[in-house]
Image 1 (cartoon, rainbow, N blue to C red):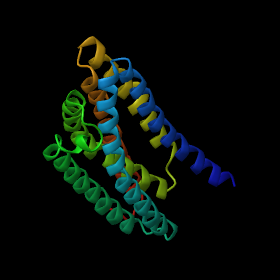
Image 2: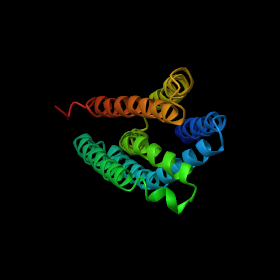
Image 3: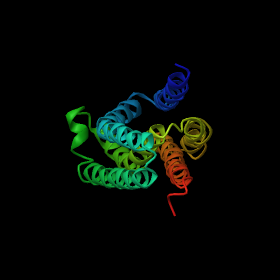
Image 4: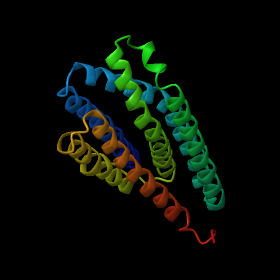
Length: 213
């Protein structure tokens, strides 16, 4: 029970920190007006839709890694981790291309207001970059969960969203007058930090075994 609570509580905090950050970002953007909030919600809804695949890959990677971890098969853990992260990278790039190419088309499924569609199309360019970092960070966190490493990832994710992402986004949005794109820049910055550190963390943990050169 203690082990389950240790892993489960940290994992729930990771998801809570992420969901809370996006909720706060929407509240902040809401102060910029109805059109801006509508455009943001369209871009965020599309990004959330594609993120479901990343979540599925994260769960699959976590299960595969945990099976290998139970057998203490560290070489296999490294192979699974590398292949899953490359899959995440490929999927993120694919989504980025789709968002970039169809940035003026996709918003029209949600709204026919010209101003909303135009701004949503601009935000989808930021969401395109966002896809790569978001996919790789989610999957890296899943891989670490599979080897029972949850404390450090929770700290990384907290810092990424609440120390870097939201403050940097607020700075860009209001101090540099970038508006909604500034908030998205902050989220991209935070997610990129989380992605990089989580990947490095997994590589470090995987190399702890003497079986891995």
